Image (cartoon, rainbow, N blue to C red; front, side, top):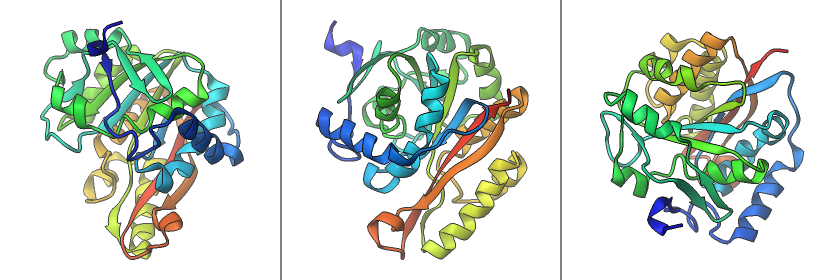
Length: 266
Protein backbone atom coordinates (compact mmCIF):
# COMPACT_ATOMS: atom_id res chain seq x y z
CA UNK A 1 0.00 0.00 0.00
CA UNK A 2 1.41 3.39 -1.00
CA UNK A 3 2.09 5.77 1.88
CA UNK A 4 0.25 8.64 0.17
CA UNK A 5 -2.99 6.70 0.65
CA UNK A 6 -2.71 7.18 4.44
CA UNK A 7 -3.77 10.16 6.51
CA UNK A 8 -0.79 10.18 8.87
CA UNK A 9 -0.79 11.54 12.45
CA UNK A 10 -0.04 15.23 12.90
CA UNK A 11 -0.31 15.41 16.69
CA UNK A 12 1.15 12.13 17.98
CA UNK A 13 3.72 12.99 20.63
CA UNK A 14 1.84 16.19 21.46
CA UNK A 15 -1.82 15.55 22.29
CA UNK A 16 -1.17 11.86 22.95
CA UNK A 17 1.80 9.43 23.01
CA UNK A 18 3.48 8.59 19.71
CA UNK A 19 4.64 5.20 21.01
CA UNK A 20 2.13 2.41 20.36
CA UNK A 21 2.58 0.64 23.71
CA UNK A 22 2.50 3.84 25.76
CA UNK A 23 -0.64 5.01 23.95
CA UNK A 24 -2.45 1.71 24.42
CA UNK A 25 -1.51 1.59 28.11
CA UNK A 26 -2.68 5.14 28.72
CA UNK A 27 -6.07 4.54 27.09
CA UNK A 28 -6.54 1.34 29.08
CA UNK A 29 -5.65 3.11 32.34
CA UNK A 30 -8.19 5.86 31.66
CA UNK A 31 -10.98 3.35 31.08
CA UNK A 32 -10.61 1.23 34.20
CA UNK A 33 -13.70 2.62 35.99
CA UNK A 34 -16.20 2.96 33.14
CA UNK A 35 -19.74 1.61 33.49
CA UNK A 36 -22.35 0.32 31.04
CA UNK A 37 -25.49 2.40 30.52
CA UNK A 38 -28.99 1.29 29.57
CA UNK A 39 -29.95 1.09 25.88
CA UNK A 40 -27.98 0.78 22.65
CA UNK A 41 -25.40 3.51 22.07
CA UNK A 42 -26.01 5.37 18.77
CA UNK A 43 -24.18 8.66 19.29
CA UNK A 44 -21.38 10.08 21.45
CA UNK A 45 -19.87 13.43 22.34
CA UNK A 46 -16.21 13.13 23.38
CA UNK A 47 -13.59 15.81 24.18
CA UNK A 48 -10.48 16.28 22.05
CA UNK A 49 -7.85 17.94 24.22
CA UNK A 50 -4.50 16.50 25.23
CA UNK A 51 -5.04 13.12 26.84
CA UNK A 52 -3.56 14.20 30.17
CA UNK A 53 -6.41 16.72 30.46
CA UNK A 54 -9.46 15.13 28.81
CA UNK A 55 -8.55 11.46 28.38
CA UNK A 56 -10.34 10.19 31.48
CA UNK A 57 -13.58 11.90 30.48
CA UNK A 58 -13.31 10.67 26.88
CA UNK A 59 -12.74 7.11 28.06
CA UNK A 60 -16.06 6.89 29.89
CA UNK A 61 -17.64 5.77 26.61
CA UNK A 62 -15.56 2.59 26.42
CA UNK A 63 -17.94 -0.10 27.69
CA UNK A 64 -20.93 1.32 25.83
CA UNK A 65 -18.93 1.39 22.58
CA UNK A 66 -17.67 -2.15 23.13
CA UNK A 67 -21.14 -3.40 24.00
CA UNK A 68 -22.61 -1.83 20.84
CA UNK A 69 -19.76 -3.05 18.56
CA UNK A 70 -20.44 -0.68 15.64
CA UNK A 71 -18.97 -1.56 12.26
CA UNK A 72 -19.13 1.99 10.92
CA UNK A 73 -18.04 5.19 12.69
CA UNK A 74 -19.06 8.63 11.45
CA UNK A 75 -16.72 11.07 13.19
CA UNK A 76 -17.54 14.79 13.22
CA UNK A 77 -15.21 17.45 14.60
CA UNK A 78 -14.80 21.23 14.33
CA UNK A 79 -12.34 23.08 12.12
CA UNK A 80 -9.67 24.79 14.27
CA UNK A 81 -7.03 25.64 11.67
CA UNK A 82 -8.39 26.55 8.23
CA UNK A 83 -11.62 28.56 8.38
CA UNK A 84 -13.70 26.55 5.92
CA UNK A 85 -17.07 27.50 4.48
CA UNK A 86 -17.77 23.82 3.77
CA UNK A 87 -16.86 20.58 5.55
CA UNK A 88 -13.73 18.57 4.77
CA UNK A 89 -13.64 14.89 3.88
CA UNK A 90 -10.29 13.23 3.29
CA UNK A 91 -9.28 11.68 -0.03
CA UNK A 92 -7.08 9.18 1.80
CA UNK A 93 -8.01 5.49 1.90
CA UNK A 94 -6.70 4.83 5.41
CA UNK A 95 -6.52 6.78 8.67
CA UNK A 96 -3.30 6.03 10.53
CA UNK A 97 -2.44 6.34 14.22
CA UNK A 98 0.28 4.82 16.41
CA UNK A 99 -2.17 1.93 17.02
CA UNK A 100 -2.44 1.09 13.31
CA UNK A 101 -4.63 1.99 10.35
CA UNK A 102 -8.39 2.22 9.88
CA UNK A 103 -10.03 2.04 6.44
CA UNK A 104 -11.84 5.19 5.39
CA UNK A 105 -15.46 4.47 4.47
CA UNK A 106 -16.41 4.33 0.80
CA UNK A 107 -19.28 6.65 1.78
CA UNK A 108 -16.77 9.50 1.97
CA UNK A 109 -16.53 9.61 -1.83
CA UNK A 110 -20.31 9.33 -2.13
CA UNK A 111 -20.88 12.34 0.13
CA UNK A 112 -18.33 14.39 -1.81
CA UNK A 113 -20.12 13.54 -5.05
CA UNK A 114 -23.69 13.94 -3.77
CA UNK A 115 -23.32 17.14 -1.72
CA UNK A 116 -20.54 19.37 -3.11
CA UNK A 117 -22.14 22.40 -1.46
CA UNK A 118 -21.55 20.79 1.96
CA UNK A 119 -18.46 18.61 1.52
CA UNK A 120 -15.11 19.25 -0.15
CA UNK A 121 -11.56 18.06 0.25
CA UNK A 122 -9.08 20.40 1.96
CA UNK A 123 -5.49 19.19 2.10
CA UNK A 124 -4.51 21.73 4.78
CA UNK A 125 -7.24 20.44 7.09
CA UNK A 126 -6.06 16.89 6.44
CA UNK A 127 -2.55 17.88 7.49
CA UNK A 128 -3.35 20.00 10.56
CA UNK A 129 -6.70 19.27 12.22
CA UNK A 130 -6.56 17.58 15.64
CA UNK A 131 -10.26 17.31 16.57
CA UNK A 132 -10.72 13.98 14.77
CA UNK A 133 -7.21 12.66 15.21
CA UNK A 134 -7.27 12.49 19.00
CA UNK A 135 -10.52 10.49 19.03
CA UNK A 136 -9.46 7.70 16.66
CA UNK A 137 -7.00 5.91 19.00
CA UNK A 138 -9.76 5.46 21.59
CA UNK A 139 -11.96 3.79 18.99
CA UNK A 140 -9.09 1.59 17.81
CA UNK A 141 -8.36 0.51 21.37
CA UNK A 142 -12.01 -0.40 22.01
CA UNK A 143 -13.06 -2.03 18.72
CA UNK A 144 -11.52 -4.85 16.72
CA UNK A 145 -12.70 -3.69 13.30
CA UNK A 146 -14.57 -0.70 11.87
CA UNK A 147 -14.43 1.75 9.00
CA UNK A 148 -14.28 5.50 9.50
CA UNK A 149 -16.10 8.40 7.85
CA UNK A 150 -14.12 11.43 9.15
CA UNK A 151 -15.63 14.89 8.58
CA UNK A 152 -14.15 18.21 9.73
CA UNK A 153 -17.06 20.64 10.01
CA UNK A 154 -16.78 24.18 8.72
CA UNK A 155 -19.40 26.93 8.55
CA UNK A 156 -22.35 24.85 7.40
CA UNK A 157 -25.98 24.45 8.45
CA UNK A 158 -26.22 21.56 10.96
CA UNK A 159 -29.73 20.71 9.81
CA UNK A 160 -28.58 20.34 6.20
CA UNK A 161 -25.62 18.30 7.38
CA UNK A 162 -27.91 16.00 9.37
CA UNK A 163 -30.11 15.50 6.32
CA UNK A 164 -27.12 14.57 4.18
CA UNK A 165 -25.90 12.05 6.77
CA UNK A 166 -29.29 10.45 7.45
CA UNK A 167 -29.03 7.78 4.68
CA UNK A 168 -25.73 6.63 6.17
CA UNK A 169 -27.06 6.08 9.70
CA UNK A 170 -27.62 2.32 9.87
CA UNK A 171 -28.12 -0.07 12.76
CA UNK A 172 -24.36 -0.73 12.70
CA UNK A 173 -23.32 2.95 12.68
CA UNK A 174 -22.07 4.99 15.65
CA UNK A 175 -22.00 8.77 15.26
CA UNK A 176 -19.19 10.34 17.30
CA UNK A 177 -18.85 14.10 17.81
CA UNK A 178 -15.58 15.62 18.96
CA UNK A 179 -15.97 18.78 21.05
CA UNK A 180 -14.67 20.52 24.13
CA UNK A 181 -16.92 22.87 26.10
CA UNK A 182 -16.10 26.36 27.44
CA UNK A 183 -12.58 27.72 26.97
CA UNK A 184 -10.27 29.74 29.21
CA UNK A 185 -12.64 30.81 31.96
CA UNK A 186 -12.01 30.38 35.66
CA UNK A 187 -13.06 26.97 36.94
CA UNK A 188 -16.14 28.36 38.70
CA UNK A 189 -17.18 30.33 35.60
CA UNK A 190 -16.55 27.34 33.34
CA UNK A 191 -18.62 24.97 35.47
CA UNK A 192 -21.55 27.41 35.57
CA UNK A 193 -21.44 27.96 31.81
CA UNK A 194 -20.95 24.26 31.05
CA UNK A 195 -23.88 23.34 33.31
CA UNK A 196 -26.14 25.45 31.10
CA UNK A 197 -24.63 23.99 27.93
CA UNK A 198 -25.04 20.43 29.17
CA UNK A 199 -28.64 21.11 30.18
CA UNK A 200 -29.37 22.38 26.65
CA UNK A 201 -27.73 19.30 25.10
CA UNK A 202 -29.56 16.88 27.39
CA UNK A 203 -32.84 18.70 26.68
CA UNK A 204 -31.88 18.70 22.96
CA UNK A 205 -32.63 22.42 22.94
CA UNK A 206 -30.98 23.64 19.73
CA UNK A 207 -32.27 27.20 20.13
CA UNK A 208 -30.72 27.55 23.58
CA UNK A 209 -27.36 26.24 22.35
CA UNK A 210 -27.30 28.73 19.49
CA UNK A 211 -27.89 31.70 21.82
CA UNK A 212 -24.66 31.34 23.81
CA UNK A 213 -21.03 32.04 22.92
CA UNK A 214 -17.96 30.09 24.06
CA UNK A 215 -20.11 27.14 25.01
CA UNK A 216 -18.50 24.49 22.76
CA UNK A 217 -15.90 24.61 19.99
CA UNK A 218 -17.77 21.78 18.26
CA UNK A 219 -21.15 23.50 18.36
CA UNK A 220 -22.10 22.72 14.74
CA UNK A 221 -21.18 19.01 15.05
CA UNK A 222 -23.14 18.85 18.33
CA UNK A 223 -26.18 20.47 16.72
CA UNK A 224 -25.90 18.01 13.83
CA UNK A 225 -25.98 15.13 16.30
CA UNK A 226 -28.97 16.66 18.12
CA UNK A 227 -30.87 16.96 14.83
CA UNK A 228 -30.25 13.27 14.16
CA UNK A 229 -31.04 12.29 17.75
CA UNK A 230 -34.41 14.00 17.47
CA UNK A 231 -35.08 12.29 14.12
CA UNK A 232 -34.21 8.82 15.42
CA UNK A 233 -35.50 9.31 19.01
CA UNK A 234 -32.13 8.77 20.67
CA UNK A 235 -31.99 9.78 24.33
CA UNK A 236 -28.91 11.60 25.73
CA UNK A 237 -27.20 10.77 29.01
CA UNK A 238 -24.26 12.55 30.65
CA UNK A 239 -21.50 10.04 31.41
CA UNK A 240 -18.80 12.34 32.81
CA UNK A 241 -17.83 15.99 33.18
CA UNK A 242 -14.51 17.58 34.13
CA UNK A 243 -12.32 20.61 33.52
CA UNK A 244 -8.62 20.81 32.74
CA UNK A 245 -8.12 22.13 36.25
CA UNK A 246 -8.96 18.70 37.64
CA UNK A 247 -5.67 17.36 36.30
CA UNK A 248 -3.48 20.46 35.86
CA UNK A 249 -4.28 21.99 39.24
CA UNK A 250 -4.59 25.41 37.55
CA UNK A 251 -8.16 26.60 38.11
CA UNK A 252 -7.63 30.16 36.85
CA UNK A 253 -8.07 29.36 33.13
CA UNK A 254 -9.63 26.04 32.23
CA UNK A 255 -11.36 24.12 29.42
CA UNK A 256 -14.50 22.06 30.04
CA UNK A 257 -14.96 18.47 28.89
CA UNK A 258 -17.94 16.11 28.77
CA UNK A 259 -18.74 12.60 27.58
CA UNK A 260 -22.40 12.25 26.56
CA UNK A 261 -24.02 9.13 25.13
CA UNK A 262 -27.11 9.04 22.94
CA UNK A 263 -29.10 5.84 23.26
CA UNK A 264 -31.70 3.96 21.31
CA UNK A 265 -34.10 2.52 23.86
CA UNK A 266 -34.65 -1.24 23.77
